[in-house]
Length: 231
Figure 1 (tube, rainbow, N blue to C red):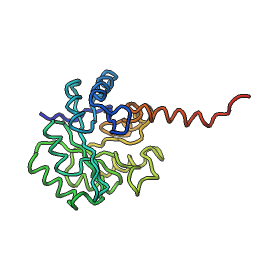
Figure 2 (figure 1 turned 180 degrees about the vertical axis):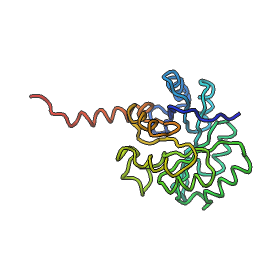
Figure 3 (figure 1 turned 90 degrees about the horizontal axis):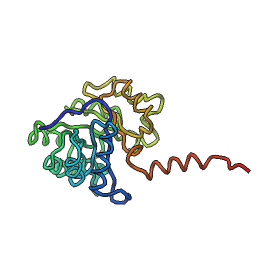
Figure 4 (figure 1 turned 120 degrees about the vertical axis):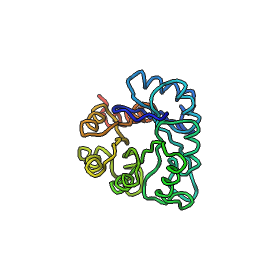
């Protein structure tokens, strides 16, 4: 039985193959730590990791499958193949790239949503968006949740960040869609997460700031590199 996403903090527990923490066992333990710290849900990548996480914690899971395709830049739950993998392992919400970029096999987002709804009519879906237009279109297509996940990570938004201008992009999304909004993307501090909730988002997904120690270490190193060494 699928569960709606609760309001609050969702922690993304992911490590790709080239990262030192890449392991379903480690992601399972990371999920335990996140839930012990108060996370209301987990976002995870791959059926293998999700299967392990589900054995360790009892909170809603947003599932994705990251897979590269030669004919498309879309890589987050890009096709029905990934959707099937996630439904088989059982997740509460499936998140997928909802940008307007060409998809693998030239299938449109609307065609993909129609296919998902016809086979899995009760599956909750989250739209990982990059632009306001993406969010508005995802809302029209009937996604259950609208997320800012890809803002700052596509070619047209690469010079932007969710938190610029006191979260202006997030405010615009909240003003233009009817479905619950999930804030995600470069949310690096508790204060930033709180601001997202204060603005009216349903939930906040935090990943690298909690679960990727190499990124956390790099931020410390970069900040310290500008310090003047005492003589």
